[in-house]
Image 1 (cartoon, helix red, strand yellow):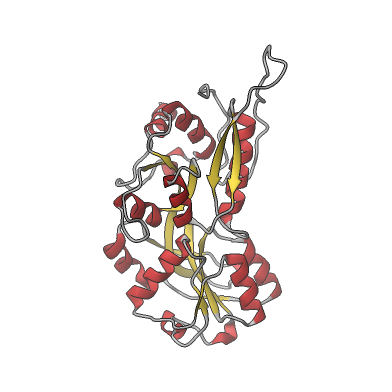
Image 2 (cartoon, rainbow, N blue to C red):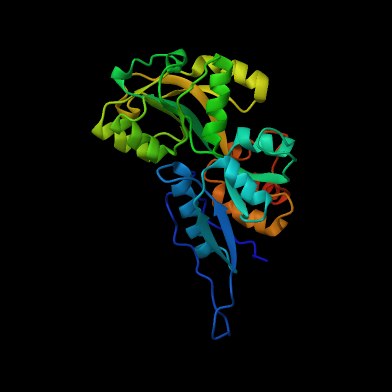
Length: 306
């Protein structure tokens, strides 16, 4: 069991890896074997990939008796399936996918016992196209070639939902990750793609430096999505300047959570929460009620608030 220690606050996106105290071998000539904590992350080019890799490094450096391992996946749905099946101990997920999991709906035929350690950042639903593709609204997608995200990804879940509330059917669908989607758009193999992730997202930033892009306003669909699938959806703008945008673009946002099995050891959950809570504990502990915080995480926030 990891000892509870006083640590410096982790940066909200875990991109500043602190040095931390290294584990000591003690009187043993050889360091005891460490238990692996596998983090189900995401695909190449997305924020989950970067965040998960940094978290794995922090676990290895800061938690005695453990080493972190980042596992590439297709995204939120697969992450929670791996958590359910014991193939990962930590998962990164969009809040709407986590809500589906705990309620046993959509991609999950039974409820998944999970709890959150922290809300880490908001994802923005991004519908990326080019200025000359003739796509100004969702309804312009009906006769276009569109990627809706990787199979078993949170992007695919939210893309299907926003298309559903808008009453748009896309016959020519591709199912590509963000890096593959950016490549396909640049090569002219698709006309647009959905992505749900932090802003800026690396793969889209790289694309925007090589090719002018445009984003489609999705903000008007937020209210109906909240009414149909729960209160995890918010309306917010993608700021001007992102990807070279000259004006903000309203869209749907979704919180991202770090989640673990509900039966994880309380002391370990406490230690992990120190690594992921970031510099804004008030924001970090805002987790929708059906999911809730792990008792170890709640203990951490209670102590931090004293």
